[in-house]
Amino acid sequence: MKKLCTIFSMCLLLMFILVPVVFAADAPAESAIDTGDTAFVLICAALVMLMTPGLALFYGGMVRTKNALSTIMQSFFILGLITVQWVLFGYSLAFGPDINHFIGSLDWAGLSGVGLDPNPDYSETIPHQAFMIFQGMFAVLTVALITGAFAERMRFPAFVVFALAWATFVYDPVAHWVWGGGWIGELGVLDFAGGTVVHIISGVSGLVVALMIGKRKGYGTDVILPHHLPMTVLGAALLWFGWFGFNAGSALSANGLAAGAFAVTQIAAAAATVSWVLTEWVQHGKPTILGAVSGCIAGLVAITPAAGFVGPMPALIIGLGAGIICFLAVAVAKAKLGYDDALDVFGIHGIGGTWGAIATGLFASTAVNPGGADGLFYGNAGQLTTQLIGVVASWVVAAVMTFIILKVIGLFMQIRATADQEIQGLDITDHGERGYAYQDFMTGSHIGLGSASQDSSAKTTSV
Amino acid sequence: MKPITKIEIITRPEKLEELKAAMNKIAVTGMTVTQVYGCGLTKGHTEVYRGQEYNINLVPKVKVEIVVCEVPVEKVLEAAKQACQTGKIGDGKIFVYPIANAVRIRTGEEGDIAIVDPADMPK
Image 1 (tube, rainbow over the protein chains, first blue to last red):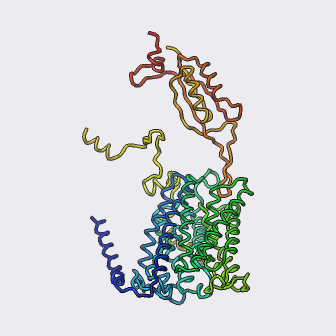
Image 2: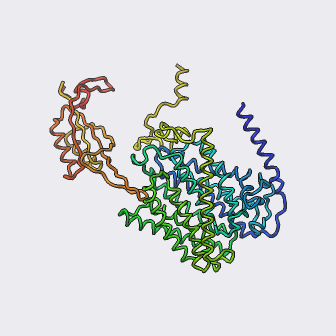
Image 3: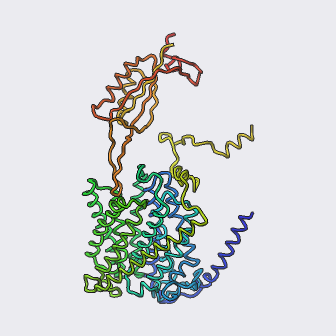
Protein backbone atom coordinates (compact mmCIF):
# COMPACT_ATOMS: atom_id res chain seq x y z
CA MET A 1 0.00 0.00 0.00
CA LYS A 2 2.80 2.33 0.95
CA LYS A 3 4.48 1.54 -2.35
CA LEU A 4 1.30 2.33 -4.27
CA CYS A 5 1.04 5.69 -2.54
CA THR A 6 4.64 6.50 -3.45
CA ILE A 7 4.09 5.57 -7.09
CA PHE A 8 0.85 7.58 -7.22
CA SER A 9 2.43 10.66 -5.70
CA MET A 10 5.38 10.43 -8.08
CA CYS A 11 3.00 10.28 -11.06
CA LEU A 12 1.17 13.34 -9.73
CA LEU A 13 4.46 15.20 -9.32
CA LEU A 14 5.53 14.36 -12.87
CA MET A 15 2.16 15.54 -14.20
CA PHE A 16 2.59 18.97 -12.62
CA ILE A 17 6.04 19.29 -14.09
CA LEU A 18 4.78 18.32 -17.51
CA VAL A 19 1.76 20.66 -17.56
CA PRO A 20 3.61 23.58 -19.22
CA VAL A 21 4.76 21.26 -22.00
CA VAL A 22 1.23 20.17 -22.73
CA PHE A 23 0.24 23.80 -23.22
CA ALA A 24 3.32 24.55 -25.26
CA ALA A 25 2.39 21.72 -27.60
CA ASP A 26 -0.83 23.51 -28.45
CA ALA A 27 0.99 26.57 -29.77
CA PRO A 28 0.72 26.91 -33.57
CA ALA A 29 3.84 25.88 -35.48
CA GLU A 30 5.61 28.57 -37.45
CA SER A 31 5.90 28.32 -41.21
CA ALA A 32 9.70 28.57 -40.98
CA ILE A 33 9.85 24.84 -40.30
CA ASP A 34 11.35 22.93 -43.20
CA THR A 35 9.65 19.57 -43.55
CA GLY A 36 12.68 17.96 -45.21
CA ASP A 37 15.01 19.06 -42.44
CA THR A 38 12.56 18.00 -39.77
CA ALA A 39 12.02 14.57 -41.29
CA PHE A 40 15.77 14.11 -41.61
CA VAL A 41 16.59 15.11 -38.02
CA LEU A 42 13.79 12.97 -36.56
CA ILE A 43 15.01 9.93 -38.50
CA CYS A 44 18.57 10.69 -37.38
CA ALA A 45 17.36 10.89 -33.77
CA ALA A 46 15.81 7.45 -34.20
CA LEU A 47 19.09 6.16 -35.67
CA VAL A 48 21.03 7.49 -32.69
CA MET A 49 18.51 5.88 -30.34
CA LEU A 50 19.29 2.52 -31.94
CA MET A 51 22.97 2.98 -31.06
CA THR A 52 22.33 2.43 -27.35
CA PRO A 53 20.73 -1.03 -27.65
CA GLY A 54 23.43 -1.67 -30.30
CA LEU A 55 26.04 -0.76 -27.69
CA ALA A 56 24.27 -3.08 -25.23
CA LEU A 57 24.82 -6.00 -27.61
CA PHE A 58 28.36 -4.85 -28.47
CA TYR A 59 29.30 -4.82 -24.79
CA GLY A 60 27.06 -7.75 -23.84
CA GLY A 61 28.88 -10.12 -26.17
CA MET A 62 32.28 -9.16 -24.78
CA VAL A 63 31.60 -10.12 -21.16
CA ARG A 64 31.26 -13.56 -19.62
CA THR A 65 27.97 -15.50 -19.69
CA LYS A 66 27.24 -14.72 -16.04
CA ASN A 67 27.34 -10.95 -16.65
CA ALA A 68 25.71 -10.76 -20.09
CA LEU A 69 22.34 -9.45 -18.90
CA SER A 70 23.67 -7.07 -16.28
CA THR A 71 25.93 -5.48 -18.90
CA ILE A 72 23.08 -5.19 -21.43
CA MET A 73 20.83 -3.84 -18.68
CA GLN A 74 23.25 -1.03 -17.88
CA SER A 75 22.94 0.33 -21.42
CA PHE A 76 19.26 -0.37 -21.91
CA PHE A 77 18.15 1.08 -18.58
CA ILE A 78 20.07 4.26 -19.38
CA LEU A 79 17.66 4.80 -22.29
CA GLY A 80 14.92 5.24 -19.70
CA LEU A 81 16.85 6.92 -16.91
CA ILE A 82 18.70 9.58 -18.89
CA THR A 83 15.69 10.41 -21.08
CA VAL A 84 13.72 11.21 -17.92
CA GLN A 85 16.66 13.20 -16.53
CA TRP A 86 16.96 15.04 -19.88
CA VAL A 87 13.29 16.03 -19.86
CA LEU A 88 13.22 17.11 -16.22
CA PHE A 89 16.39 19.24 -16.13
CA GLY A 90 19.22 17.77 -18.26
CA TYR A 91 18.28 19.53 -21.50
CA SER A 92 17.86 22.81 -19.67
CA LEU A 93 21.29 22.53 -18.02
CA ALA A 94 22.96 21.71 -21.35
CA PHE A 95 21.09 23.90 -23.83
CA GLY A 96 18.99 26.27 -21.70
CA PRO A 97 19.63 30.03 -21.52
CA ASP A 98 23.34 30.54 -20.88
CA ILE A 99 24.72 31.56 -17.48
CA ASN A 100 28.24 33.06 -17.76
CA HIS A 101 29.21 30.62 -20.56
CA PHE A 102 29.34 27.94 -17.86
CA ILE A 103 25.95 26.24 -17.54
CA GLY A 104 22.41 26.48 -18.85
CA SER A 105 19.77 27.87 -16.53
CA LEU A 106 16.86 25.80 -15.26
CA ASP A 107 14.37 27.94 -17.20
CA TRP A 108 13.61 25.04 -19.52
CA ALA A 109 13.20 22.44 -16.75
CA GLY A 110 10.43 20.00 -17.58
CA LEU A 111 10.83 21.21 -21.18
CA SER A 112 8.95 24.33 -20.26
CA GLY A 113 9.19 26.65 -23.27
CA VAL A 114 10.69 23.92 -25.45
CA GLY A 115 7.90 23.80 -27.98
CA LEU A 116 7.25 22.93 -31.57
CA ASP A 117 8.52 26.18 -33.03
CA PRO A 118 12.15 26.40 -34.08
CA ASN A 119 14.68 27.90 -31.70
CA PRO A 120 16.92 30.03 -33.96
CA ASP A 121 19.89 29.63 -31.58
CA TYR A 122 20.11 25.97 -32.55
CA SER A 123 18.30 25.63 -35.86
CA GLU A 124 15.89 27.82 -37.74
CA THR A 125 14.24 25.08 -39.74
CA ILE A 126 13.34 22.30 -37.30
CA PRO A 127 11.04 22.27 -34.27
CA HIS A 128 12.82 22.94 -31.00
CA GLN A 129 11.60 19.58 -29.68
CA ALA A 130 13.22 17.78 -32.63
CA PHE A 131 16.56 19.32 -31.64
CA MET A 132 15.91 18.47 -27.99
CA ILE A 133 15.15 14.81 -28.61
CA PHE A 134 18.07 14.43 -31.06
CA GLN A 135 20.42 15.81 -28.40
CA GLY A 136 18.73 13.64 -25.78
CA MET A 137 19.82 10.52 -27.69
CA PHE A 138 23.43 11.78 -27.49
CA ALA A 139 23.15 12.18 -23.72
CA VAL A 140 21.81 8.64 -23.39
CA LEU A 141 24.54 7.09 -25.53
CA THR A 142 27.36 8.96 -23.81
CA VAL A 143 26.41 7.70 -20.36
CA ALA A 144 25.98 4.17 -21.72
CA LEU A 145 29.48 4.24 -23.28
CA ILE A 146 31.17 4.53 -19.87
CA THR A 147 29.63 1.28 -18.61
CA GLY A 148 32.14 -0.77 -20.61
CA ALA A 149 34.99 0.39 -18.37
CA PHE A 150 33.51 -1.00 -15.14
CA ALA A 151 31.64 -3.95 -16.68
CA GLU A 152 31.24 -7.11 -14.59
CA ARG A 153 31.87 -5.54 -11.19
CA MET A 154 29.73 -2.49 -10.32
CA ARG A 155 26.52 -2.98 -8.31
CA PHE A 156 23.37 -1.83 -10.07
CA PRO A 157 22.12 0.63 -7.38
CA ALA A 158 25.49 2.40 -7.33
CA PHE A 159 25.50 2.41 -11.12
CA VAL A 160 22.09 4.14 -11.28
CA VAL A 161 23.19 6.89 -8.88
CA PHE A 162 26.50 7.28 -10.72
CA ALA A 163 24.79 7.53 -14.12
CA LEU A 164 22.39 10.23 -12.92
CA ALA A 165 25.14 12.22 -11.19
CA TRP A 166 27.53 11.89 -14.12
CA ALA A 167 24.94 13.02 -16.67
CA THR A 168 24.07 16.01 -14.49
CA PHE A 169 27.53 17.12 -13.37
CA VAL A 170 29.72 16.10 -16.32
CA TYR A 171 27.74 15.57 -19.52
CA ASP A 172 25.31 18.48 -19.22
CA PRO A 173 27.94 21.13 -18.37
CA VAL A 174 30.39 19.94 -21.04
CA ALA A 175 27.63 19.79 -23.67
CA HIS A 176 26.81 23.36 -22.68
CA TRP A 177 30.44 24.44 -22.91
CA VAL A 178 30.81 23.08 -26.45
CA TRP A 179 27.37 23.38 -28.04
CA GLY A 180 25.07 25.34 -25.74
CA GLY A 181 26.79 28.71 -25.87
CA GLY A 182 29.50 27.91 -23.30
CA TRP A 183 33.14 28.95 -23.18
CA ILE A 184 34.70 26.11 -25.23
CA GLY A 185 32.40 26.81 -28.17
CA GLU A 186 33.03 30.57 -27.82
CA LEU A 187 36.77 29.85 -27.94
CA GLY A 188 36.30 28.38 -31.43
CA VAL A 189 36.85 24.70 -30.64
CA LEU A 190 35.39 22.59 -33.44
CA ASP A 191 33.38 19.54 -32.38
CA PHE A 192 30.88 18.59 -35.04
CA ALA A 193 29.11 15.61 -33.49
CA GLY A 194 30.75 15.05 -30.15
CA GLY A 195 34.40 13.99 -30.18
CA THR A 196 34.91 16.06 -27.05
CA VAL A 197 31.41 16.03 -25.60
CA VAL A 198 30.69 12.36 -26.16
CA HIS A 199 33.88 10.37 -26.59
CA ILE A 200 36.66 12.08 -24.67
CA ILE A 201 34.63 12.64 -21.52
CA SER A 202 33.11 9.15 -21.55
CA GLY A 203 36.50 7.53 -22.24
CA VAL A 204 38.40 9.47 -19.58
CA SER A 205 35.61 9.03 -17.02
CA GLY A 206 35.55 5.31 -17.79
CA LEU A 207 39.27 5.08 -17.09
CA VAL A 208 38.89 6.93 -13.78
CA VAL A 209 36.10 4.59 -12.65
CA ALA A 210 38.10 1.52 -13.72
CA LEU A 211 41.12 2.74 -11.73
CA MET A 212 39.08 3.66 -8.67
CA ILE A 213 36.98 0.52 -8.29
CA GLY A 214 39.83 -1.79 -9.25
CA LYS A 215 40.34 -4.78 -11.48
CA ARG A 216 37.89 -7.62 -11.94
CA LYS A 217 38.52 -10.63 -9.71
CA GLY A 218 40.99 -12.86 -11.52
CA TYR A 219 42.05 -10.18 -14.03
CA GLY A 220 45.51 -11.02 -15.31
CA THR A 221 45.49 -14.54 -13.87
CA ASP A 222 42.24 -16.16 -15.04
CA VAL A 223 41.23 -16.39 -18.66
CA ILE A 224 38.43 -13.81 -19.11
CA LEU A 225 37.02 -14.12 -22.63
CA PRO A 226 34.09 -12.68 -24.60
CA HIS A 227 31.19 -15.12 -24.39
CA HIS A 228 29.40 -14.29 -27.65
CA LEU A 229 31.37 -12.51 -30.36
CA PRO A 230 28.59 -12.77 -32.98
CA MET A 231 26.45 -10.65 -30.60
CA THR A 232 29.29 -8.14 -30.42
CA VAL A 233 29.48 -7.99 -34.22
CA LEU A 234 25.71 -7.41 -34.43
CA GLY A 235 26.00 -4.61 -31.86
CA ALA A 236 28.91 -3.00 -33.71
CA ALA A 237 26.94 -3.14 -36.98
CA LEU A 238 24.02 -1.34 -35.30
CA LEU A 239 26.44 1.25 -33.93
CA TRP A 240 27.95 1.85 -37.37
CA PHE A 241 24.42 2.16 -38.86
CA GLY A 242 23.24 4.53 -36.14
CA TRP A 243 26.40 6.62 -36.42
CA PHE A 244 25.14 8.03 -39.74
CA GLY A 245 22.34 9.66 -37.75
CA PHE A 246 24.85 10.76 -35.13
CA ASN A 247 27.18 12.53 -37.56
CA ALA A 248 25.04 13.46 -40.58
CA GLY A 249 22.18 14.48 -38.30
CA SER A 250 24.47 16.94 -36.54
CA ALA A 251 24.16 19.13 -39.65
CA LEU A 252 20.56 19.60 -38.34
CA SER A 253 19.48 19.97 -41.95
CA ALA A 254 19.07 17.72 -44.99
CA ASN A 255 21.75 19.54 -46.97
CA GLY A 256 25.19 19.17 -48.50
CA LEU A 257 26.89 19.34 -45.14
CA ALA A 258 24.87 16.33 -43.97
CA ALA A 259 25.85 14.43 -47.13
CA GLY A 260 29.52 15.26 -46.54
CA ALA A 261 29.34 14.18 -42.91
CA PHE A 262 27.63 10.93 -43.94
CA ALA A 263 30.30 10.17 -46.55
CA VAL A 264 33.31 10.87 -44.33
CA THR A 265 31.73 8.78 -41.55
CA GLN A 266 31.67 5.73 -43.80
CA ILE A 267 35.16 6.44 -45.16
CA ALA A 268 36.80 6.79 -41.75
CA ALA A 269 35.05 3.73 -40.30
CA ALA A 270 36.12 1.64 -43.29
CA ALA A 271 39.73 2.87 -43.15
CA ALA A 272 40.02 2.16 -39.43
CA THR A 273 38.55 -1.33 -39.87
CA VAL A 274 41.26 -2.07 -42.41
CA SER A 275 44.12 -0.50 -40.46
CA TRP A 276 43.23 -2.16 -37.10
CA VAL A 277 42.98 -5.59 -38.76
CA LEU A 278 46.25 -5.13 -40.64
CA THR A 279 48.08 -3.91 -37.54
CA GLU A 280 46.81 -6.82 -35.50
CA TRP A 281 47.61 -9.26 -38.30
CA VAL A 282 51.22 -8.07 -38.39
CA GLN A 283 51.55 -8.04 -34.58
CA HIS A 284 49.82 -11.31 -33.68
CA GLY A 285 49.70 -13.29 -36.89
CA LYS A 286 45.92 -13.49 -37.22
CA PRO A 287 43.24 -11.05 -38.38
CA THR A 288 40.35 -11.20 -35.89
CA ILE A 289 36.69 -10.18 -36.17
CA LEU A 290 36.84 -8.54 -32.72
CA GLY A 291 39.67 -6.46 -34.17
CA ALA A 292 37.60 -5.55 -37.23
CA VAL A 293 34.62 -4.33 -35.20
CA SER A 294 36.88 -2.55 -32.69
CA GLY A 295 38.57 -0.83 -35.62
CA CYS A 296 35.31 0.40 -37.12
CA ILE A 297 34.23 1.88 -33.77
CA ALA A 298 37.63 3.58 -33.39
CA GLY A 299 37.27 5.13 -36.86
CA LEU A 300 33.71 6.29 -36.15
CA VAL A 301 34.84 7.86 -32.87
CA ALA A 302 37.75 9.67 -34.50
CA ILE A 303 35.73 11.14 -37.39
CA THR A 304 32.93 12.35 -35.12
CA PRO A 305 34.40 15.75 -34.17
CA ALA A 306 35.69 16.29 -37.70
CA ALA A 307 32.68 14.98 -39.65
CA GLY A 308 31.33 18.36 -40.78
CA PHE A 309 34.71 20.00 -41.32
CA VAL A 310 36.86 17.64 -43.42
CA GLY A 311 36.79 16.15 -46.92
CA PRO A 312 37.08 12.50 -47.97
CA MET A 313 40.89 12.17 -48.11
CA PRO A 314 41.50 13.64 -44.65
CA ALA A 315 38.74 11.32 -43.39
CA LEU A 316 40.65 8.38 -44.83
CA ILE A 317 43.81 9.47 -43.01
CA ILE A 318 41.90 10.07 -39.75
CA GLY A 319 40.40 6.59 -40.01
CA LEU A 320 43.69 4.84 -40.83
CA GLY A 321 45.33 6.65 -37.91
CA ALA A 322 42.50 5.76 -35.53
CA GLY A 323 42.79 2.04 -36.25
CA ILE A 324 46.51 1.99 -35.52
CA ILE A 325 46.52 4.40 -32.55
CA CYS A 326 43.58 2.75 -30.79
CA PHE A 327 44.97 -0.75 -31.38
CA LEU A 328 48.24 0.30 -29.76
CA ALA A 329 46.34 1.89 -26.85
CA VAL A 330 44.31 -1.25 -26.25
CA ALA A 331 46.83 -4.01 -26.99
CA VAL A 332 50.12 -2.43 -25.93
CA ALA A 333 49.59 0.52 -23.58
CA LYS A 334 46.80 -1.10 -21.53
CA ALA A 335 48.80 -4.29 -21.04
CA LYS A 336 51.87 -2.29 -19.96
CA LEU A 337 49.95 -0.05 -17.54
CA GLY A 338 47.91 -2.94 -16.17
CA TYR A 339 44.55 -1.24 -15.54
CA ASP A 340 41.32 -3.14 -16.15
CA ASP A 341 39.23 -1.04 -18.54
CA ALA A 342 37.11 -4.13 -19.18
CA LEU A 343 35.76 -3.32 -22.64
CA ASP A 344 38.31 -0.66 -23.64
CA VAL A 345 36.22 2.46 -23.29
CA PHE A 346 39.32 4.59 -22.70
CA GLY A 347 41.44 2.91 -25.38
CA ILE A 348 38.81 3.38 -28.07
CA HIS A 349 36.66 6.38 -27.07
CA GLY A 350 39.11 8.34 -24.93
CA ILE A 351 42.11 7.91 -27.23
CA GLY A 352 40.07 7.83 -30.46
CA GLY A 353 38.18 10.97 -29.44
CA THR A 354 41.39 12.76 -28.55
CA TRP A 355 42.97 11.81 -31.89
CA GLY A 356 39.83 12.99 -33.69
CA ALA A 357 39.77 16.34 -31.87
CA ILE A 358 43.43 16.94 -32.69
CA ALA A 359 42.97 15.76 -36.29
CA THR A 360 40.14 18.27 -36.64
CA GLY A 361 42.69 20.96 -35.85
CA LEU A 362 44.93 19.54 -38.58
CA PHE A 363 42.48 18.83 -41.41
CA ALA A 364 39.49 21.18 -40.96
CA SER A 365 38.79 23.29 -44.01
CA THR A 366 36.43 26.19 -44.65
CA ALA A 367 36.14 24.89 -48.20
CA VAL A 368 34.13 22.01 -46.72
CA ASN A 369 32.21 24.06 -44.18
CA PRO A 370 32.32 27.87 -44.31
CA GLY A 371 30.87 27.90 -40.81
CA GLY A 372 33.96 26.10 -39.45
CA ALA A 373 37.62 27.09 -39.54
CA ASP A 374 40.83 26.13 -41.34
CA GLY A 375 43.17 23.67 -39.65
CA LEU A 376 46.98 23.51 -39.53
CA PHE A 377 47.31 21.98 -43.02
CA TYR A 378 45.14 24.75 -44.45
CA GLY A 379 47.30 27.52 -43.05
CA ASN A 380 45.78 28.10 -39.61
CA ALA A 381 48.09 26.74 -36.89
CA GLY A 382 46.02 28.50 -34.23
CA GLN A 383 43.15 26.04 -34.68
CA LEU A 384 45.33 23.16 -33.46
CA THR A 385 46.09 25.08 -30.25
CA THR A 386 42.39 25.81 -29.82
CA GLN A 387 41.55 22.13 -30.26
CA LEU A 388 44.22 21.17 -27.70
CA ILE A 389 42.69 23.55 -25.16
CA GLY A 390 39.34 21.82 -25.70
CA VAL A 391 40.96 18.40 -25.27
CA VAL A 392 42.81 19.31 -22.07
CA ALA A 393 39.75 21.01 -20.55
CA SER A 394 37.50 18.02 -21.24
CA TRP A 395 40.11 15.54 -19.92
CA VAL A 396 40.49 17.52 -16.71
CA VAL A 397 36.80 18.08 -16.02
CA ALA A 398 35.91 14.45 -16.79
CA ALA A 399 38.69 13.08 -14.55
CA VAL A 400 38.15 15.42 -11.61
CA MET A 401 34.36 15.34 -11.59
CA THR A 402 34.19 11.56 -11.97
CA PHE A 403 36.63 11.19 -9.07
CA ILE A 404 34.51 13.45 -6.86
CA ILE A 405 31.21 11.77 -7.86
CA LEU A 406 32.54 8.30 -7.06
CA LYS A 407 34.04 9.42 -3.74
CA VAL A 408 30.71 10.97 -2.69
CA ILE A 409 28.67 7.93 -3.75
CA GLY A 410 31.15 5.73 -1.87
CA LEU A 411 30.30 7.58 1.34
CA PHE A 412 26.76 6.28 1.48
CA MET A 413 26.61 3.13 -0.61
CA GLN A 414 28.70 0.18 -1.68
CA ILE A 415 29.83 0.67 -5.28
CA ARG A 416 31.64 -2.53 -6.07
CA ALA A 417 30.14 -6.01 -6.00
CA THR A 418 31.47 -8.29 -3.26
CA ALA A 419 33.81 -11.14 -4.16
CA ASP A 420 30.95 -13.64 -3.83
CA GLN A 421 28.65 -11.60 -6.06
CA GLU A 422 31.40 -11.29 -8.64
CA ILE A 423 32.05 -15.03 -8.64
CA GLN A 424 28.35 -15.82 -9.03
CA GLY A 425 27.89 -13.10 -11.64
CA LEU A 426 25.85 -9.91 -11.51
CA ASP A 427 23.00 -11.34 -13.61
CA ILE A 428 21.86 -13.47 -10.70
CA THR A 429 22.97 -11.31 -7.77
CA ASP A 430 21.69 -7.95 -9.07
CA HIS A 431 18.81 -8.92 -11.33
CA GLY A 432 17.74 -12.45 -10.37
CA GLU A 433 17.74 -13.67 -13.95
CA ARG A 434 20.18 -15.33 -16.29
CA GLY A 435 20.96 -14.77 -19.95
CA TYR A 436 21.26 -18.44 -20.73
CA ALA A 437 19.40 -21.23 -18.97
CA TYR A 438 21.68 -24.22 -18.57
CA GLN A 439 19.97 -26.85 -20.61
CA ASP A 440 20.33 -30.13 -22.36
CA PHE A 441 20.92 -29.12 -25.93
CA MET A 442 19.42 -32.33 -27.31
CA THR A 443 16.01 -32.08 -25.65
CA GLY A 444 15.96 -28.37 -24.85
CA SER A 445 14.84 -29.06 -21.30
CA HIS A 446 16.46 -27.51 -18.27
CA ILE A 447 18.94 -29.42 -16.23
CA GLY A 448 17.63 -29.21 -12.66
CA LEU A 449 18.65 -25.97 -10.96
CA GLY A 450 16.15 -26.37 -8.12
CA SER A 451 12.39 -26.65 -8.00
CA ALA A 452 9.90 -23.89 -8.74
CA SER A 453 9.05 -22.40 -5.38
CA GLN A 454 5.36 -21.91 -6.24
CA ASP A 455 4.90 -25.55 -7.24
CA SER A 456 6.58 -26.95 -4.15
CA SER A 457 4.45 -24.83 -1.80
CA ALA A 458 1.29 -26.00 -3.61
CA LYS A 459 2.39 -29.61 -3.16
CA THR A 460 3.06 -29.24 0.55
CA THR A 461 -0.37 -27.72 1.19
CA SER A 462 -2.19 -30.42 -0.75
CA VAL A 463 -0.44 -33.27 1.05
CA MET B 1 28.44 -63.05 -9.82
CA LYS B 2 30.84 -62.21 -12.63
CA PRO B 3 33.27 -59.33 -12.00
CA ILE B 4 31.99 -55.95 -13.26
CA THR B 5 34.45 -53.47 -14.83
CA LYS B 6 34.18 -49.84 -15.79
CA ILE B 7 36.20 -48.55 -18.73
CA GLU B 8 36.60 -44.80 -18.97
CA ILE B 9 37.78 -43.49 -22.32
CA ILE B 10 38.80 -39.83 -22.62
CA THR B 11 39.39 -38.89 -26.23
CA ARG B 12 38.85 -36.42 -29.07
CA PRO B 13 35.22 -35.29 -29.57
CA GLU B 14 35.47 -36.00 -33.29
CA LYS B 15 36.26 -39.66 -32.55
CA LEU B 16 32.99 -40.27 -30.69
CA GLU B 17 31.05 -41.61 -33.67
CA GLU B 18 33.81 -44.07 -34.62
CA LEU B 19 34.06 -45.19 -31.01
CA LYS B 20 30.30 -45.76 -30.79
CA ALA B 21 30.38 -47.82 -33.99
CA ALA B 22 33.29 -49.91 -32.70
CA MET B 23 31.49 -50.60 -29.40
CA ASN B 24 28.33 -51.54 -31.23
CA LYS B 25 30.32 -54.09 -33.24
CA ILE B 26 31.54 -55.89 -30.11
CA ALA B 27 28.02 -55.86 -28.57
CA VAL B 28 28.61 -53.16 -25.97
CA THR B 29 25.18 -51.52 -25.76
CA GLY B 30 25.42 -49.13 -22.84
CA MET B 31 27.55 -46.05 -22.41
CA THR B 32 27.52 -42.63 -20.75
CA VAL B 33 29.05 -39.72 -22.66
CA THR B 34 30.15 -36.44 -21.07
CA GLN B 35 31.69 -33.33 -22.60
CA VAL B 36 34.82 -32.54 -20.60
CA TYR B 37 37.91 -30.33 -20.75
CA GLY B 38 41.32 -31.70 -20.11
CA CYS B 39 45.00 -31.80 -20.89
CA GLY B 40 47.71 -34.36 -20.78
CA LEU B 41 50.72 -33.77 -22.98
CA THR B 42 48.55 -31.45 -25.10
CA LYS B 43 49.70 -27.87 -24.68
CA GLY B 44 46.47 -26.30 -25.92
CA HIS B 45 46.34 -23.34 -28.28
CA THR B 46 46.55 -19.55 -28.30
CA GLU B 47 43.62 -17.17 -28.80
CA VAL B 48 43.97 -13.40 -29.35
CA TYR B 49 41.38 -10.85 -28.17
CA ARG B 50 42.07 -7.17 -28.88
CA GLY B 51 45.77 -7.91 -29.06
CA GLN B 52 45.91 -9.84 -25.76
CA GLU B 53 47.04 -13.44 -26.15
CA TYR B 54 45.40 -16.12 -24.04
CA ASN B 55 46.80 -19.60 -23.69
CA ILE B 56 43.92 -22.04 -23.77
CA ASN B 57 45.46 -24.96 -21.91
CA LEU B 58 42.40 -27.17 -21.34
CA VAL B 59 40.95 -28.48 -24.58
CA PRO B 60 37.53 -30.02 -25.23
CA LYS B 61 37.37 -33.82 -24.95
CA VAL B 62 34.64 -36.42 -24.55
CA LYS B 63 34.56 -38.91 -21.68
CA VAL B 64 32.89 -42.21 -22.52
CA GLU B 65 32.07 -44.50 -19.57
CA ILE B 66 31.30 -48.14 -20.31
CA VAL B 67 30.48 -50.83 -17.76
CA VAL B 68 30.86 -54.47 -18.83
CA CYS B 69 30.80 -57.98 -17.40
CA GLU B 70 29.93 -60.34 -20.30
CA VAL B 71 32.09 -58.62 -22.93
CA PRO B 72 35.80 -59.17 -22.17
CA VAL B 73 37.59 -55.99 -21.05
CA GLU B 74 40.49 -56.71 -23.41
CA LYS B 75 38.13 -56.67 -26.37
CA VAL B 76 36.74 -53.26 -25.35
CA LEU B 77 40.24 -51.83 -24.90
CA GLU B 78 41.39 -53.13 -28.27
CA ALA B 79 38.32 -51.74 -30.09
CA ALA B 80 38.59 -48.37 -28.34
CA LYS B 81 42.29 -48.05 -29.13
CA GLN B 82 41.69 -48.83 -32.78
CA ALA B 83 38.80 -46.35 -33.06
CA CYS B 84 40.47 -43.44 -31.29
CA GLN B 85 44.09 -43.68 -32.39
CA THR B 86 45.45 -41.00 -34.74
CA GLY B 87 49.07 -41.29 -33.56
CA LYS B 88 49.21 -37.60 -32.69
CA ILE B 89 49.30 -35.91 -29.28
CA GLY B 90 45.80 -35.57 -27.83
CA ASP B 91 44.39 -39.03 -28.60
CA GLY B 92 43.51 -39.41 -24.92
CA LYS B 93 43.58 -42.04 -22.17
CA ILE B 94 41.71 -45.15 -21.10
CA PHE B 95 41.22 -46.01 -17.42
CA VAL B 96 39.93 -49.34 -16.11
CA TYR B 97 38.20 -49.71 -12.70
CA PRO B 98 36.71 -52.64 -10.81
CA ILE B 99 33.06 -52.04 -9.84
CA ALA B 100 31.79 -53.19 -6.41
CA ASN B 101 28.14 -53.50 -7.36
CA ALA B 102 25.50 -52.36 -9.88
CA VAL B 103 21.74 -51.85 -9.47
CA ARG B 104 19.09 -51.69 -12.19
CA ILE B 105 16.75 -49.02 -10.83
CA ARG B 106 13.65 -50.27 -12.75
CA THR B 107 13.63 -53.78 -11.27
CA GLY B 108 15.96 -53.51 -8.31
CA GLU B 109 18.19 -56.32 -9.70
CA GLU B 110 21.77 -56.21 -8.39
CA GLY B 111 25.13 -57.42 -9.61
CA ASP B 112 26.05 -58.60 -13.10
CA ILE B 113 22.40 -59.13 -14.03
CA ALA B 114 21.81 -55.41 -13.62
CA ILE B 115 24.06 -54.44 -16.51
CA VAL B 116 23.41 -57.08 -19.16
CA ASP B 117 20.46 -57.32 -21.51
CA PRO B 118 18.02 -59.85 -19.94
CA ALA B 119 17.64 -61.44 -23.39
CA ASP B 120 21.36 -62.33 -23.37
CA MET B 121 21.26 -63.97 -19.94
CA PRO B 122 21.69 -67.79 -19.82
CA LYS B 123 18.32 -69.32 -18.88
